[in-house]
Length: 507
Image 1 (cartoon, rainbow, N blue to C red):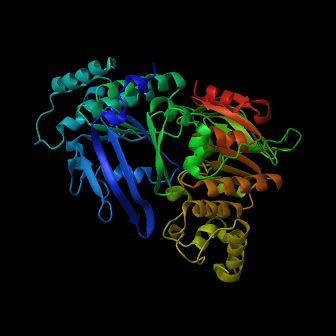
Image 2 (cartoon, rainbow, N blue to C red):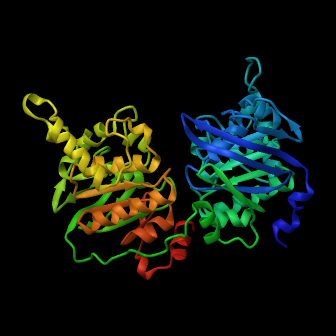
Image 3 (cartoon, rainbow, N blue to C red):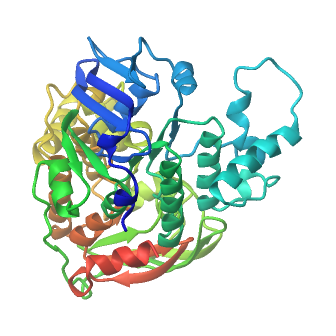
């Protein structure tokens, strides 16, 4: 018998939370528009949508971080509420477990679990026995065991996830939001976590599950609420829903399932690493990327992918091993050395690492190539700068008002194109793309991969890093699987089913 049958239908249970007409804008950007949302006692609902669809904004309104615009209504247990604050939301029983878990790594398991119970009290001596009693009570409720006196930083990620759930339970929540709770878990760990979620629902707690793993969404939830571009597409029963149909609802487009892999084994080698090791981050990494090849690198969060990219770009030094570029052995003291050697890097966090938000679009594009656009006297030649900026704006079809506008005025997809333009201006031999589609909509995502394929056809070597299996499967020539800092598998999309790659990564 399925969990949906064992549990009462949502319609037969009292509603815990209702939101009506929720809208929110930030500086002229409409994040949410007239969104309704509700959840009943003991219901497991999934909040689904692409990055930038408004999921986080809606959660922050429910938790009192943001106030909705206009005449929105928020009802809790049927009672209409005024302005919510984080404190009043917690008092009402709203808890959120964010993807980063927000735990205190140097505090013990017991101290982390009991932490919120001590918020708002007058200063007093810590009572470790009381902390342990609270923690043990919550663990017993779930039928789980954890070492109460162990610092959280010494736990595996799956155990930390349990600590975060226990900390929320210690406050007797009525509604629990879980933001990407399985992003860094194996399949076995994920199954164990989903069992915990079902226990919470059986205890009457309303659970809102946010995950980009659609198979999990359909397995755990009774109902899916879909957001797209800040509006609500609708509420849909999980029973009978397919991953493909849910993707279409989330994106408004049919998913491109064309494999673009090519055979590049005869092309000249651009990058080769031999036993590259940085203790605690990655170990014995030997990879080859050829001219015109798009090499995918995937794995769970924390696998060591970004740490490897940082070394290849000269941001960190390896402890062991070597790497060569175009057959010449390299040793970078800084990222400036990597840029001059012909390597560029588009980081995952473009807001803080990829762009200088207050500066203009033009200044961001030319930042890595200032020497090239300098005229006499060490001053920037305005004509050379304008031609370079105009070339990349046209080539990448970046939608701008004026090149002198702040880059922060652009959409997420256009900001990502500016980052690409910035590094393409350096004329690299190898481009490293780390999660290049984070925060962009489906149209911009497709356009970015079209640009990537065009660069590869022109001869550029590309390392595409992503934990989104479809991204690497459909848009690369080969895929490497990284786990615990090691390369543990290689897959060729034309010879491998995507389900086989997903099973290996989440095993």
